[in-house]
Image 1 (cartoon, rainbow, N blue to C red):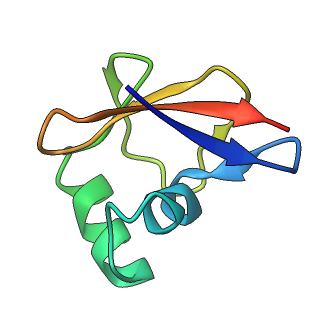
Image 2 (image 1 turned 90 degrees about the vertical axis):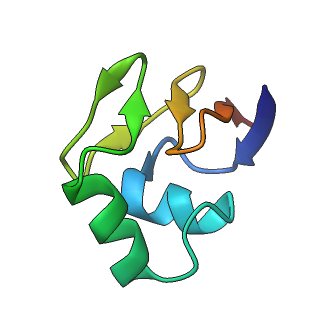
Amino acid sequence: MREIEISTEYIKLDQFLKLAEIAETGGHAKLLIQDGLIKVNNEICLARGKKLRDEDIVQDHNGNRYIIKKL
């Protein structure tokens, strides 16, 4: 599991996908989310604006897992 550090209270899911280099652009992030390919805390998430906070876990379309760590 890869740690992704944030310095704010939360990060929105679409922004996270770009930060973690899962998506190349905001449009790509939107498609991944719309197609149900992203899980947050083991549940498919269809909300681009979902707020991710410390200790949340994201799984991408390839099965890679990422954990949010607040600095």
